[in-house]
Image (cartoon, rainbow, N blue to C red; front, side):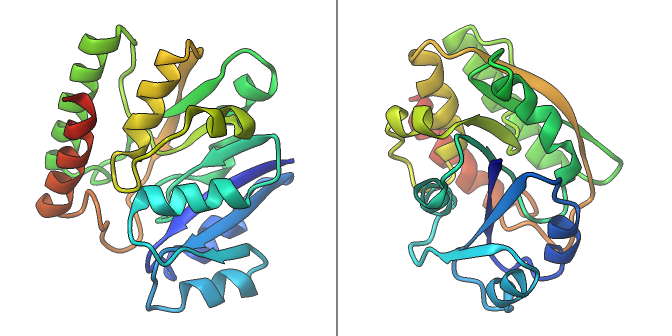
Length: 213
């Protein structure tokens, strides 16, 4: 079994599609981070395990999911419909098979799925990450897989939007084998709280920039 942490903030529109496409053996843990649209109640009705994290922040929701997980292998992914859960086995397989310690889903966007400002920001962050670490990554993909116990040992501290980058930085420092596999990136349901606005993208850059400083 693989646990899948799904940070959620007002994703009632996308939840049925996401949860309905979860592969057999992949158990969703929906972490409600203050939704006001009934996301938590809907996820529970759809059979997902739901926990609430009142502290705002993407990293806070991910950490709460980590704390609640039980499976040896753990995945993270956005719950906005931009990523297809059916790609999870491709992302998890190198970890399950012992060939990698951290796998990132490298996003291959369909038309209209990735706003230009968000794509440019991601590219700049990845370029700086490559320069500082030597990692040959092309994306800081939000669909990822690793072993739960090893993630605990990294001791991630960021509870905002720097969580995904801190994970990669600390994993690299610990000598982890980090690889990418391609995943489709779809036009999401509704508007993203992070990449859908310039303000959200700037907030993410600020949080990740602090980690690279």
